[in-house]
Amino acid sequence: MKISQLAQRAGTETAFEVLVKAKALERQGKNIAHLEIGEPDFNTPENIKQAGIKAIQENFTHYSPSQGILELREAVAEHISSTRNIPVSPDEVVITPGGKDIIFFTALALLNPGDEAIYPNPGYPIYESAIKIAGAIPVPMALLEENDFAFDKEQFKNLVTPKTRLIVVNSPGNPTGGILSPDDLQFIADIAIENDIMILSDEIYSRIIYDGKFLSIASIPGMKERTIVLDGFSKTYAMTGWRLGYGVMNKDVAQTITKLVTNSDSCVATFVQMAGVEALRGPQDEAERMKKIYEERRSIIIDGLNEIPGVSVKMPKGAFYALANIKSFGKTSKELGDYLLYEGGVATLPGTSFGKYGEGYIRFSYATSKEIIKEGLKRTKEALAKL
Ligand SMILES: Cc1ncc(COP(=O)(O)O)c(C=O)c1O
Image (spheres, rainbow, N blue to C red):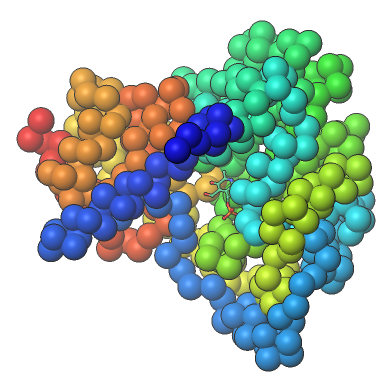
């Protein structure tokens, strides 16, 4: 059997592969401290769960329009209007099974073979994969530690060519925890406007930001029409398994992406969408509480990693990842990640899971309990001391 060229171009998310390896070790009786997966360890807040249960009981169990139920699109439009300070109508919202689909559908909707798309590297691996699936050329924008994993204006300017159709930004970023400053965003916006380029702004961590205020590139004058904002429920409300996310974009792109939803998912489970309405319109204290706990965990993991000889890590400004520099050990990220897993009993992700500029780094997720973080740090320290 021959698989298609399109499928051969698809990449993957190695977080799931490490999870499989770690689970195999657990089946052999080994104890593993899981610091690999970017998944909140909290349960979904009770009011949201109850809204989902009630929706099933009220028979929200049929198809909905592919674009999403109006009530949820209205709730999203209100939320994005107030947090990004731009007028958004429900026609400009598309509901998808997870924010991830917005990456895939944006690439399919906007890119032709031979087009170029700039994306952050190290960055969420699905950007590169989706660009390749669309047959376009992925152009990595290196996020360097010496720039606080922010943005190098000169480098960026040189990457833009007449073939550039899309720029992906992700702030706060996975795996770096870096955020783009207002100045960086303005710089990108100016180039996008001047060269007629669309932006995919992945704002999935916009509510998990510790220092400073979140700013969306869509809020910059002239940018709303050319930005696709990706956001969702997985991280903010600990709803990863519900599969619920959305994109906000101009009406033409919204119609195109809706057509792609019709072709693939038909719609998101209707009761899940009803739970999403409660998430956005109900009390927000649980989301705030989770953020405060991430912030406490951030201090523990950053201090702990920086105490390990040979390891250094910058303070992440948002999301729940620490990208630690491990260059002093003279091993590749993958070798060191495997060593930590098999010898130390700590599951992490090699920086190269996020692209070639992740070489020399290991990502530790702190979306897990303080006890597991402390145990993971202890094991990491002990294992690295033996090298
Ligand atoms: C940067 C980024 N974007 C998008 C997603 C997708 O999230 P979901 O599809 O669960 O909404 C993730 C998940 O890890 C992520 O880290």
